[in-house]
Amino acid sequence: MKYLLVQIVNGLQLGMVYSLIALGYTMVYGIIRLINFAHGDVFMVGAFVGVLGFSSWGLSLPVAGLVSLAVTAALGITIERLAYRPLRNAPRISALISALGVSLFIQYFSSLKFVFGPNYRVVYPPLKMVQWNLGGITITNIQVLIFVVVALLLIGLQYLVYRTKFGMAMRTVSYDSQAARLMGINVDYVISMTFGLGSALAAAGGMLYMLAYPQINPFMGTMPGLKAFVAAVLGGIGIIPGAVLGSLIMGQVETLTVAFVSSQLRDAVAFGVLILVLLVRPTGILGKRAVEKV
Image 1 (spheres, one colour):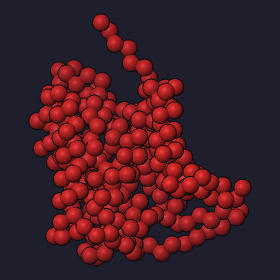
Image 2: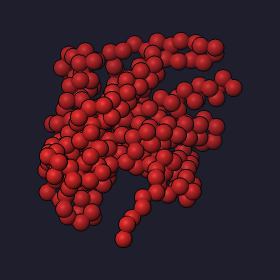
Image 3: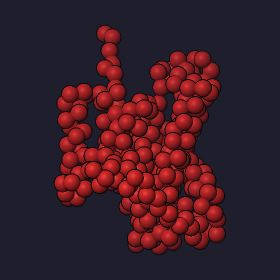
């Protein structure tokens, strides 16, 4: 029983990291109906910038995290401006191909020796691990840090979306971008800031992922990015609570599969759960069926 509880805690840790990546997918899709497949690579850049911040630039861990958020937010805005905005009125397949191209470009550009380099890096974070035993369950200070940071970011995001003018503009653009323009909302600005916000959240996820699993490489964002996308679809793409719920489910399924079945089957089981859920609810767990008027 104690072993099961430990694995549930580990699943929460992984699911919360996935949720920060999945939120970027779901916000961008909610605004412009685009799947930004370069989002996992933005996650990777955030992890690398954070590591460079405290290992090479002499910054403290919190300051390195803030620098990582700022750099990736600027990267997300740049990607939107150069790769997606010119194709906004083009067929969907054009934007999809552009997203895949941006993803490959970031991966292989980051692999160059004068950027991040092609090799794996072992991370030695300036945060000594401390363990506590609570009723036979071992919890580390890194897990507590992940839980607290993710909870604060989710609360802040909810406040931004539902309690601020910018959040109202985001929801308006999501509902009807043409009507939003007629109301005087700068739609391009809202879309760019949404990309920046989603990228900053992915960077936070990259920093936390690096602390929990201290090894990084230029291709590290591929699988977490794919699983976070699956989590967003599982919970209901375009719905913020759905992205969080889907991520927590994915984290639990993956961790419990590794613990009780086989590590080789964790990806198959995780994606199998997605297929089963979509067979029952094609719009995801929290998704609502859209009604089209003719």
